[in-house]
Image (cartoon, rainbow, N blue to C red; front, top):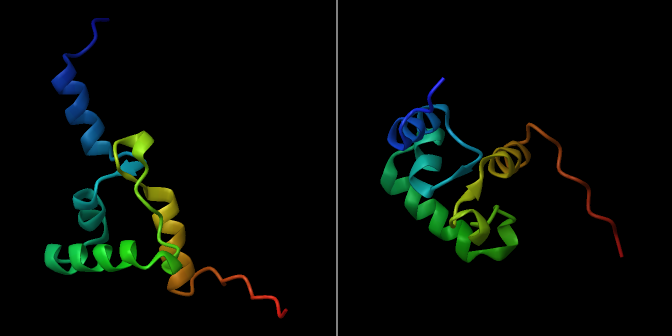
Length: 87
C-alpha cells in the first residue's frame, strides 16, 4: 500500500481534529462567534489566575484540547472543583 501524499494526510488529520489546537480551531470547536472567542481567550491568557491551559511552545504554540475541555467542565460545574484548604 502506498502512502498518501502529504497534503492528503494533512487533510484527513484536520478533519479528525487533533489534540493540540490553534485558537481558531478551539473557537470553532466551542461554537462561539470568532470575535467573542478571541476576546475571551485574550482575557484568559492575561489572567494567569484563571488556570486556563496555556499554549505549548513544544506543540507549535497550540493548546491541549483535553486540558481545555477539563477546564471548561470544571468551570461550568460539570466536575466539582477541589475545595480550598483553610490555612
